[in-house]
Image (cartoon, rainbow, N blue to C red; front, side, top):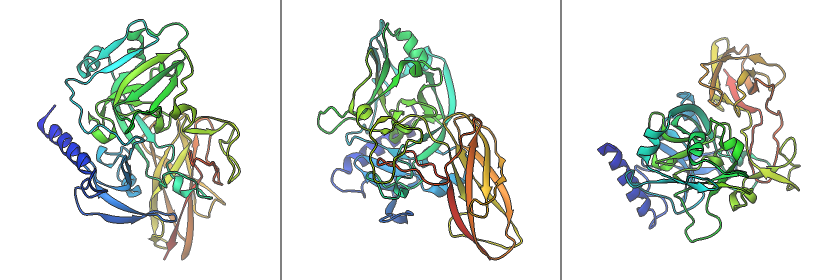
Length: 406
């Protein structure tokens, strides 16, 4: 590990320890500015953190950092210093010694393992995938009626190239026993006081043994930033970020359905076809949240901007789904009355953001309501009206912005 990387780790450790005596300034690497998100009480600090550009701050203990939406217009791969941060527990690691770190694999296996970083990088075949990591509550602040939880706009997501080893290979090396039902994953973050709410997630054994689930040690070609899960992060392509356990330290194969708090009580969605309920009602039956919903966004132009009559305007954005792949992105200039097909950008893989663009020309002055709608290769698309659930998860309504032709 090079000296500059160690210095960044030391800086992060000092910043986090310092934050115990003040709410935000000790985290910041520069002066704070403000951003107004598009919902009630939407004013937030915009601050730079160790290894991060200025980010939208929703909390500091534990850190909750949203990516400013304008960053997504710059490139299809989200740089590490622009990638959102989401923690659940306040006691988070501020430094990890790569020489003494170990990943433990146990439970219902015939060969328990204790692997160093060197073991993982040299004893198993390296693999890479480009995949979107999206917080379950991305866009929660836009739910109407308003719901409880972090009031986030559209920036709790990112797209990166993850490099590591297949979880399947590590499980095969430990040899899961007969009757194995699930695999649990724990990280180095922990409750401030001992409790049963340690952040442990679980996957069914068949899913865990699917070759695309990964234990990553690199993000966009370098070590994963500390705030995004150094030294190892569980990558579950096509699934919401709640399963992407940071600072992965322990894997256990179990012969029951895991009943920990974050599986049995939290991160659950209505058990029906739309995963929704009438506004104001709670679901009577729920299941753990799982696959990403299909989504698309306009990244340029932006809300409230002006375009010129009789001059071509390039409209562009991003789309993604749970891994079926994006087949079409449709754009409307009249609030959804009619649609044109956009041109898709490079295909970086079925779990990646897919860029799209289209050229429009306003024929007369006045307001224009632009809407964007993605269609997957299996025909899944976005609803025109927002679906509601009390937990504020899985928002994927057709997005709309208003511009003015002048």
